[in-house]
Length: 469
Image 1 (cartoon, rainbow, N blue to C red):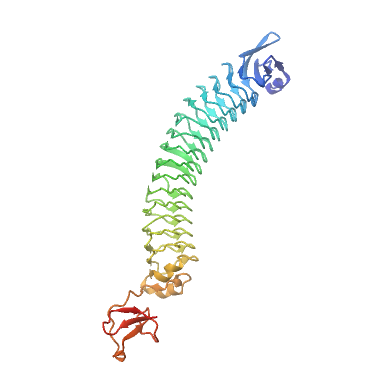
Image 2 (cartoon, rainbow, N blue to C red):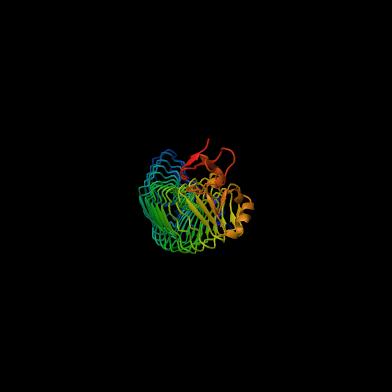
């Protein structure tokens, strides 16, 4: 039995404008190409007649009218039910297009690189826009969103200009990878029915100020809202099935966030380089903060650590600006560089539950003055867990019975002052042997020093402290 595709390959027809394939048994025709390579306007006929038999034109073939660089307008008849991949791709001058109502799918790359395309009339029965269908269409000012549209495919509108507001219909359940990346949209409204937001789906939208996120969504992919410079606030949905990494990375002006109560993990790089992030609420059941999650959030001066938090990843708060850190009881691990370069940090209490602190975890905190560690057994402390200035000047406070253990533990032994440190010299009773002398020299531990190096206590006032040469 002859298949339809075989029949199409064997039946050719041409008129003055187009080349066709036609199917004798099923009685339909497809536009394969045009003879008018430099035409500025084309009208596709609704039917062709071959040997006295009419064949309705129902298809426009793969890349059939692509690369027509002078084409500005095209009329597609209502008989067309299918427009195949790349059919009008690289038609740089095409200004507008009306797609017949019987078309249910815009095929891959169909109108990609139509640089002057400004008006798109999508058919009312459309259910899917495939991969790259309108990619690099830089001037779309008018576009409708049919009520039956269920899926916007990967790269569908990548680097295209769209109207300022895009309100996807209630039927839309899926937005693919990079589908709306790098558009000029200011606001997206996503329906409550949506179940999947792809990787980088709404990334790099320089003008995006707001996103109405669905009340419940199954998956939000990695980098979904990456690099949106104008977003200032985000309220996440109540329920999210899976949350990807780097979701708001490099959203420079993001100021405050209400986290989804369904999520117990802050994935890595979620708010990396959100320079203006100042306020965020995390529910107490959050157990993990991932690598680089809040790194370089320079305005993050206060942060409530969730009560059930267990682990803080590498670089999690690196180069932020926290002034106070109150860890919850139950925290077990603090990653490498986790709190590096928080210049306002002055005191620190590490609960007894912490067993591991990574390398450079609290390095480069010049004002850190008191470090309290409640664990009787010294936690594992990575290389340069604190910087040299902290080791030489800060007071390490540990359980009284553990002082010797900390003095012997790697890295912890670098602290010069464990549990006690000199606080200065006020009144010192003069030693009988020193009667008649101008003063007595004491070292930094308050002990009488030999020679003439140390602190010189004036024997007459017993209060005046002079630094000996």
